[in-house]
Length: 173
Image 1: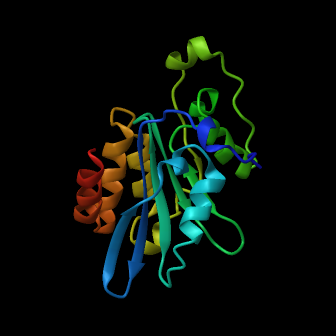
Image 2 (image 1 turned 120 degrees about the vertical axis):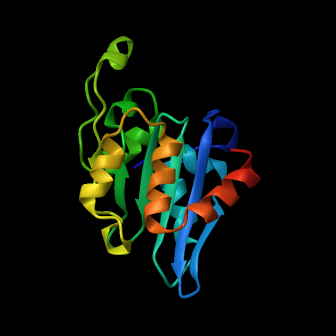
């Protein structure tokens, strides 16, 4: 479990964090506080505070290097990280691997660019919402794309690309 971090301890991670909610009236995408990019616990807390009746999940783009999908549930969050090797450089990636009970890869930071990335977590995390695990696997496996492009493909497949684009425009992404 990650230790609480003081506001002044946050890193300067670029990217974005959004909450996606499916309600009876359709998809709603809202920005999360930037602190969601620093701590999995913080991201989960922000998503749980939404208290929505429908499906809720978070899309986190961390430095355009990798993405994380967080889907809170009463039995613990379901998670998917697009690149487990990111745990060499990012604490939030370590948080995700810890939550998944996956060992942090023992990689030399100087050789990280020579290692092919791999995902960890639940490829079927959004299957009940219309994104089968096979399609998620193809999206995650396309390492020529940046994380925001992969998340855009996920949003398009789910039918909330316009809502995501509007929030990202507001955020200046």
